[in-house]
Image (cartoon, rainbow, N blue to C red; front, side, top):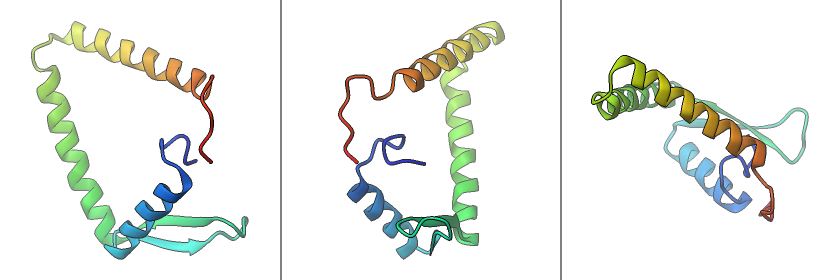
Length: 99
C-alpha cells in the first residue's frame, strides 16, 4: 500500500507502522526486493486484534443500515461501490503528492 492510498505522508506512515511494531501487533522486516522498503505482517496478537475489530465494524455497519430494507441496502451498497470506484479513478487529479 502506498502512503498516498492510505492518505498519509511517509513520516506519518513510518510512525504509525513503528507504533504497531512497538505494540507487538506488527512484525517489520526489510524488503527482499526493495532496499528502501519494509514488509509489515501481523503478529498473532495483531491478528487477534484485527479479528475483534472486524467484528465491531460488521456489527456497527449492520446497525447503520438496519433502518433500510433489503433492496435499499443493496442499492446503498451499489452506490457506495460507485463512489469508491470514482474516488479511485480520480485520486490524485489536481492533488499534489506528499511523497
